[in-house]
Image (cartoon, rainbow, N blue to C red; front, side):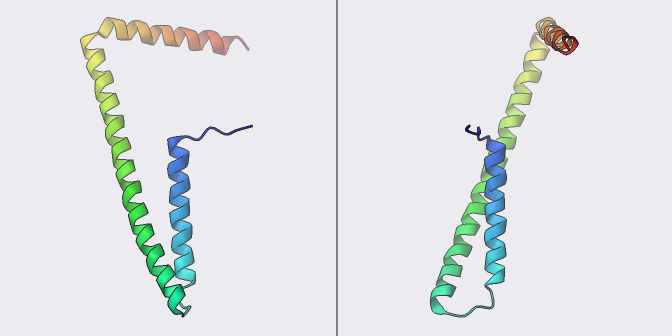
Length: 101
């Protein structure tokens, strides 16, 4: 069975990867060696870029959510009776589904 990946799940997974990579960098901080230092430097830069992208995605998601809320509010203000009818219909459907136990 396949699991559907949501944006929220992907975001949480990315944050976990970043935290794990940071923990790995801290754990190897006392290790010496040119190749290890080079790898640490590349990893640190990759983490900085990943964090920046994650923050950008989070801000974009918040902006998108606010736009949806604003659009819904605008629609309700312009069409109050239609919005009330839709809300009543949704409430009726939910009530019927819950009473079918």
